[in-house]
Length: 446
Image (cartoon, rainbow, N blue to C red; front, side, top):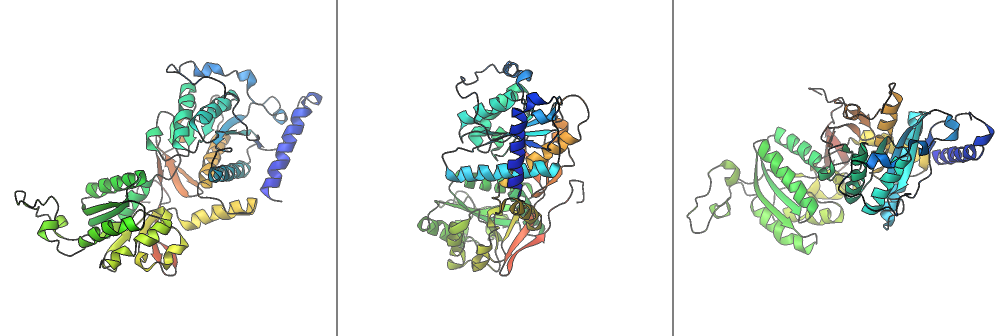
């Protein structure tokens, strides 16, 4: 029997228990409880104003959800905020899969005193704020989600004001901190890992060919910081609009800097009038040894061949990428052979994918693992809690030892950011291979 059938049966038992509660003072337990996805109940409320101090007083403990089968026991209540009715069909599919993953985590944890309460954010900021209020009104001790950055910003106003922690799924670092933790895949982690590995292989001079987008800005900025901090140099950077024709000229300009010795007129800070002499550092007089190319999919397959087309020796120059390169189709692109990128260990993620597919009949989208890990983390913190008060303290959530989840090792930091153990993968004709494994512990030396 698939988990979906089990979940539906549990929900049916929950509803039957609600109907027959008057007939018995202590109904038998039925295991972990998952409420049905609910529309926010506070949609008509005015937005929260600047004074948030009274937010917690909005919620009456007597109105907190308490499933009949739990008797008089007060459950650990967890709100799950996802865009179940978003305008985008893709967002709705992701929300559904993330809810499935959260259900899977609840049943894997097996806690009988754990209540998962999904709420619909509708995929926008107003809906997210209303969903957060609805979850708190139902007694949520912690909120998981939302997914989109603008939704996290809106919902976090509510949770912070009520003094409740949030584990959100956005990678927008501006939302982190002060009780908001981002369990996501921020590109800065990937860039730091692949840069560290490249420089450990004696690569110190780099080129950059990045899209002219917010993502491109973020990745190239992180790369520049990592290279500078580790003593390397970015010889040249080019940006492009994401159109195959618009990529040609930037790729050609970057290719010129692959020469072993860069002509004087092309060197860093050179001025044609000769008043500013070119620097003598080898990093700016010699060509790059590697190029960061943070593109994906069809555009990547159009971009990568341009470097050898413009006479870049790709047997000598290493191509660096991002985790979206974990795509078997890229193994058929000769220009990317030998390319490196950082990402979760495929063997670890495959275990979760198989587990999810076995329960629901289809493989999960990438983001589903975030809902699984956040829910499982919440359930395990709840299960080990034996004292009065909340199990979701800052100290518990930010355990420096971290946790091992669906994508491997991770830990949430006091500033709300996430750290992950990432592997280095290489694109080879026979497949994508791990060439430097992910760390298995945050202890020094692992």
